[in-house]
Image 1 (cartoon, rainbow, N blue to C red):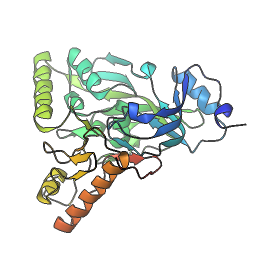
Image 2 (tube, rainbow, N blue to C red):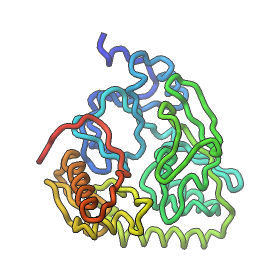
Image 3 (cartoon, rainbow, N blue to C red):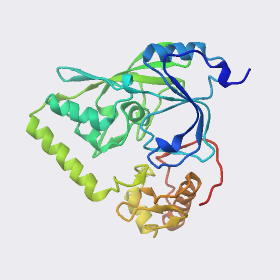
Length: 305
C-alpha cells in the first residue's frame, strides 16, 4: 500500500505534490508530498489519531512568511490550518484567537474593540501560531509579553492547555515541544482609547512602508539581531558591504539590508546561498556570527536560474 493510500479519511482536503511556492511569501520552494487542510479541530484530531506511519514527518505551516522552503520540497504531510482556525473572540481585555489568524488581523480586531497593547502585532507578517512558536516581535515587544495560554494538540491527537508561565521564551525562540501543533491562544491587552490605538497602528504602518520592502517577495527579517554586538543585524550587513549583493535572482534589499528579495526568478537555493555568503562576509568583516531568523526547511536541491 502506498503512503498516500494509507492516509486516514478526513472531512478536510488532501492535496498531493502541492507546489508550496504558491503560498510561500518568497514564492519559491518545491512541493509538499501531501498537503492536509483540516476542516476543523476535530478533523485534525481524527487525522492525528489515525495516521499510521509518519509521526516524525508532519510539518505545520502558517502564513509561510518567515520561512524558506527548499527546492526539493517537503516529504510527509504538511498541515495548513484553514479558515476554521482563524476565529477571534474577546472578553473585556482578553482575546481568544485561533492559531491560523494573521497577526495584523488580530491587532486590528483588538483596535476595533478598544483593546490596546497589541498594536505591535501589525508589524509581524505571520500567524499567531507561528509567532508564538518563534516568539516573534516588533518595535520593542514580543508576543510572549501578551500571551496568557495556548491550546495545542500533540501528534497522537491529545489536547494540551498550557499556561504561558510554563513556556520558556527567549529572543525569537520558544521551548514549545516540537510534537505540539498550536490550535489557539489567549492574549491579554488593556482598555485604551480607540484614537490612541489607531494612531499607533498608523505610525507602525508608516514606519514599515518607509523602511521595509513589504510589497516585494521576501521572508521578513533574515537574521536575528546578535546579543553581544552594539550593532543590529542590518547594520552589520551594511558595514560589511552586502547591501545590494546578488545571487542569481536573489538580492539583498537596498531599502532594508536584513531582507532578502526574490526579484522574480530566484530559487530557494540562491536565496539560501546568498544568506550564507552574507553571514560569511559579516563574520570576516566584524567577527560576528549572524544566526538565521528565517527558518529553512525541506530537501536541499541545487537550482540556479
